Image (cartoon, rainbow, N blue to C red):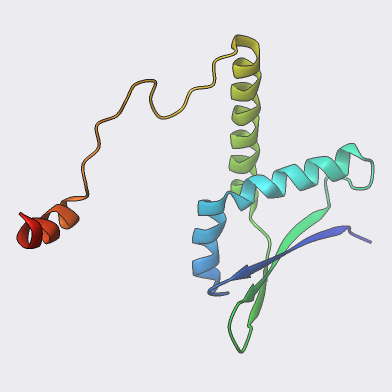
Length: 122
């Protein structure tokens, strides 16, 4: 009787340790909060609804692992979503949408590329 909301993801590795890194890197714990909140707002789910990721490897034998982020990850995802909404509201209100810099940024090649190409071209 519990609603389960699945989301299918492809991945290089369905190893749970690798998936934990993917969840953090791609913000899937934030997606968890968004889907659960949306289902609750629509009246199709309550606080007991589950949100799971069905993760399938892109190469044979196409191993599948189903994961559900824990309560701590869900709280962090919800907090990040709230902060993102606050930032969006502030930017909308002020008309200022910050990027990485408001100035021209001087940029060098990565040190390894400078070393490699300095030997050949300079």
